[in-house]
Image 1 (tube, rainbow, N blue to C red):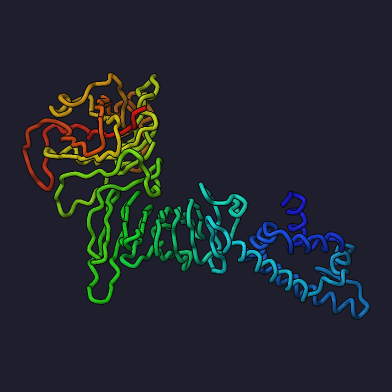
Image 2: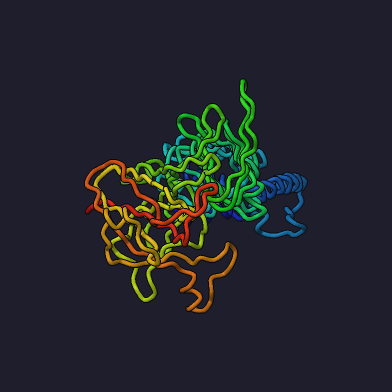
Length: 472
């Protein structure tokens, strides 16, 4: 479909075609599926539908006027444009309906035959397409277009939608879902991430067979092949209610804090999800097999009320990469006046928990799938723990994390204040010769002076970061 074809279709909506152009447009719609879809997407908008109904009423009145010998009139004005549009004998109210029906059938047929990613129209919710990736056809998914959506079925790729009210959805295939309204998505399988303002995502609901997720600023939900439901709190907390099923009672409401994740299996009991594969910007879930190097991350923390997850950012290491699963300002940076360490660029990042700087007996296990280089980014202000100094080598590379400022606060404006808001780190590395588990210890050797929920350490340093990179 050419730009000239698009102009004809747009002029068709504006009632501005000569008889010859009108005939050519009808032929185009009959023979070009892309043109039919283009026209249908625009005609599906509420404003277009209302305008179409108005055209039909005006056309009937004008045809009646012509039959009575009067000059056609539109909007109280007479003109050549009106006579030019209504003069062709084939353009009657019935013909317009036939054309619209034909376009609608071609549009739906084209959607159904799409072997990659498709959304079946016909719902009440008109959404804006804001992003497409991978297998999504750019011709079928024009960024900026508005389409009505109810049933969503993606076999591959990703698509970003903006709903009325400001909520944005990131949908990754394969996925099957029902957009019941602008406030609720019913997810049968696949994964979705919801983002919104305080009045947006907080009023948005994702319902699965195991859980009802709501009142979150930014959260992700995934339904796997075994019908389990994963819920991840990305930015701010989220409320989760288990869905009652025959033969078992509902679990009490669960409130996840930022950086926490749980999995509901068939029993409906939530269990901690220790690792979550995230997109490189840590704003949504990554697809299956997100990392070719890291297969799993787990720890020895047994506290029943702790649900923190390790975020895995495949290829995400670089300036501004997330350091922890909480505290969005705490990211990795080069030292002032220096370049970001080139050796680390493109490595997989394992986002740890800032609170683990207080865990004296911590063990983190990183399971790798192939030989690789594993990096530990330790607080440069503290003496390295014995396990780190014995098993890893100091690369000589230095970097920093931060700024360490409260949520919602601005970074210090003065250079001295900005430097104070960052923590310097030493980059240690170890060559891992084969696939398997690699066990890391606590952030420092220290004396435990108190042991509340998870222990406390005198002068606890910042928690270390982890990066993994395949060998050349």
